Length: 149
Image (cartoon, rainbow, N blue to C red; front, side, top):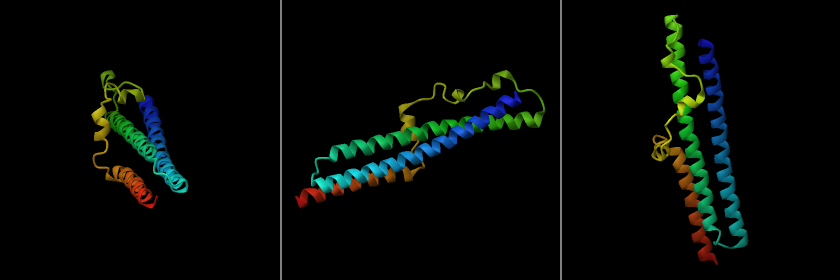
């Protein structure tokens, strides 16, 4: 049983690292794509690209929030496995079968809630400030293009 706990803990740590890399990539793509659309609109002298900006920023924001939500569950499962490892090491006894089921998927059973995705933003102002800033930049660009053309 101890070997399964250690194995799952290692997998959870790797999954958490992958989510961090994925979230960083999403942010990079959001900024790069929004910047490219801004440059394209200025070059084309058209504010008609505004809906594509809004959709682009919204999609990237949703993806990152979804990744945060999933990562929170991975971290919670990791904490639970760590507690079980600690308990097993302290008592030198076998772990009760009801206390543990192997698999990363155990952290997700019956847990997906749409409102939980929004709650994942709680205590993370840097996330919504980034995407609100991107939306503000696109809105300013739209206004400037309207007055210049």
